[in-house]
Image 1 (cartoon, one colour):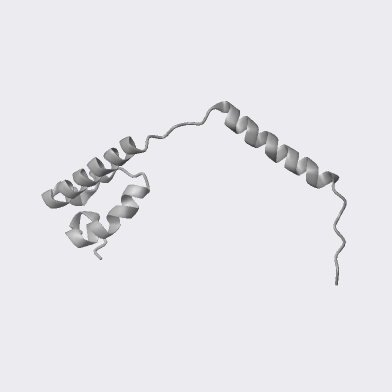
Image 2 (tube, helix red, strand yellow):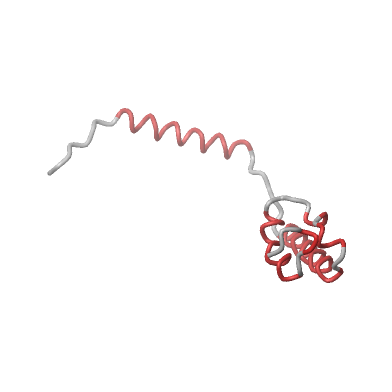
Length: 91
């Protein structure tokens, strides 16, 4: 692979694309895309697919009561463990 990101060929850029996208970096600002219409089109398609997937499965925050129940259950479990007598070890 070439050290200069602006001189990557399409295969090299596309190999880096999953890591670039998952890192949260602004993939559209990558130097390779300035000179490569094919990879710009690929990135646009991937962004369209990702947006469609987000719309299919919207992120929904659970109500505060859910977190309160989880916290209460953890506390009860921890308190129960501290009150139980130790289990003898059998050789």
